[in-house]
Length: 264
Image (cartoon, rainbow, N blue to C red; front, side):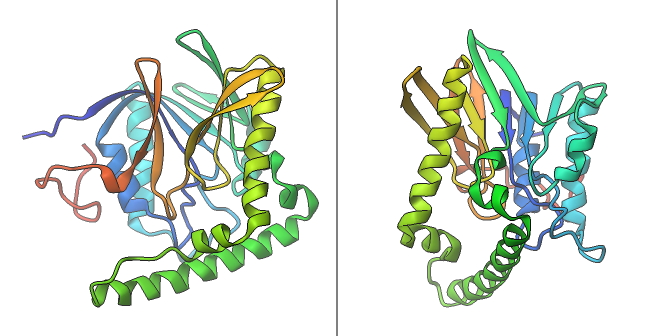
């Protein structure tokens, strides 16, 4: 018996980082399998070209790409917006292949409100300052994720709750928290200046939905989070945005695992 999929008008995912050891591709594939979107927006960093290794691209990562192409073949409108980790694709911005569009940013009007989607790395001071420093930071992040996975293995083994090192580092750094706040406010202010009521980013890996007051009016700020730690997505239905966490979803027990399963 086929499981009933949830109908979603617009789904937004970002910061998947396929090709990176920390990517939760199995979970993302399972999530995408559970929905029936009209529009899928990939808001940057689908493939982590910075961390790409020719010897590391597991079957589960390939299956995510296969599922996206399955959506396209079924008539789903897919917008691939470029991020900093897949920035080399920006030279092909404007490419249109049927139901697939490759862009740097996207403007959609949904239920009378103008939405502005873009990855958000243009507001990141570290990205504008030195790409080398940003890449070194990424290498450090990869190492932190690997150590975290090892620690969580032993925590689970002894029945303890998992821990996120990177989130604790961010929470312990006041300057980092302020930077993330400024990042969201900057996007909202520029959005309001240009007449957008909703601004949607990725990049920061901090999933959130919040109203931000600006000199040009209030803006709804959205961030779709990531599929390395948080495993979150944004869904739009009936005029409302919702932040969806993979950990809160329930899936049919009859479903096969990503490694064993088919695409439907």
